[in-house]
Length: 613
Ligand code: GCB
Image 1 (cartoon, helix red, strand yellow):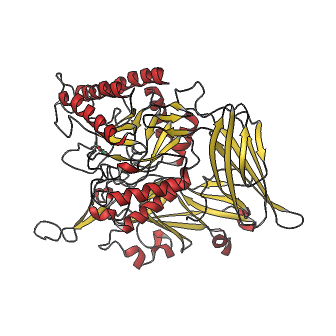
Image 2 (cartoon, protein in one colour):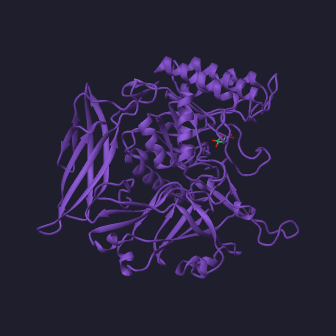
Image 3 (spheres, protein in one colour):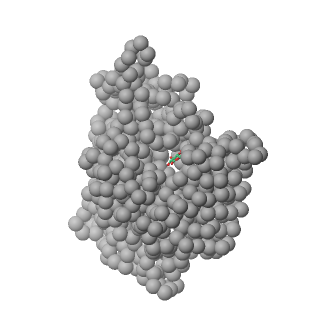
């Protein structure tokens, strides 16, 4: 069980938010054992007093910001620091809690405030926070100095996993040489990737809200549970409002079911003329402080009312068959790496809607909450994936890896449980699921996830053989990746109809579960042309996609319930002989300009929307 609900920080009449984005002082610890920062306790003084610092933007990956190749490929601890003035009224009012929150930092983080450790966190894609109220009250005249050390080292027990390999042959490698091996295909960008902020709540506060929605005929049902922290007794008022701010249901108990007459359901994009309809659930809580005053806290949660169900052959949203025609993405762009960037986020949504895509998978880690909130508003359906990518080594199936994986699912479900856009959890991508320990591993992991959230189906994405995969018995939907005529039979497009048909028939024959083609694609260098098509040209990417689509069209009327292209956009990877400055399977370039394939998909997705929507 985790500590606290970690509701997304929102301003309200009782809560303030102060963003700490911008330039922070920064230093990478390049000492041979990467430990100088701890030995010399850099957090005790200003970072600039313990050595040279550079300016580093937050949020952003640090890798591509400078001209220094050692920083791009740095492995170990980097140190961030920033001083901030906390508003005097936050300090003087003892009834105010002040919380420091990091949206995400990759991979392991330790946080100090004025030299005192306030929290540490493992995992690069989920938020963490610490209450710092008493600390900042100790010396209200001083600015508050926030130090965050972040380590990107991956081991067999991290998610994603990796190994550190020391090269001790001095005839071939320089002294102290080591490399980070990874088993996944994207650059291991690091740093503070999402906003850092301070926010306040009253001492008695709304700590968590859980909603589960359903409907019967025209009546929406919102089952909710509010947890309040800081007081034994508090009075609550829960009000559900429609888009125009009219109250449609209310209650004054901490849990219950709100009934909404003439409900406006949350529908996916293109399935309804008014997709992404959100109600607002205002939770207003009062707790007496003294005879004359009370603490009041107000938190407003967007709520979409919808259901999700899976049958042997269909994925149902609001009891209507939903066909996933969409993309796999990455959080990735020039210069900022995996840093959250609003211009990029909005551009990507505009491209998704231009394509007529109705869904994406958060390959291969949880994306920023800000992105899921946009999905809620626009009706873009999400398969929410945890960072379980690259579980290839048998040692990554061990007990401590599994227990960490369970905690990551705890954190992911805690964070994303209330998003109507999230319709399914993916617990992993392309694990070595044919290995013997995979059976227990996935059985346990999926059972755990279902216990956390009984309302959503659970899957993981497989590229192993249907006859040998050991986790597939436990998933609700089979998600298969395949790269026919790319990694297998390269250049031979003619194999696709046979091999793809066999893939679907084998999986369905064995498991009788609906199938999503969760990845397929080909690299294409924009502007490279050949006819007849050759690999890496735009023509080959087009031809390959079209061959896949022909098979999808036969099977989607039976049990194939979705197709997600690999990938929405080109993205950075580690340097390797099969990667030319990154993975080029995007239908858009990394700068979000269309390749020829984007127009093929656009035509297809709009046609599918009209046929299935
Ligand atoms: C896959 C992986 C994805 C890779 C892709 C590729 O199967 O899931 O992370 O980027 O193939 O292009 O190799």
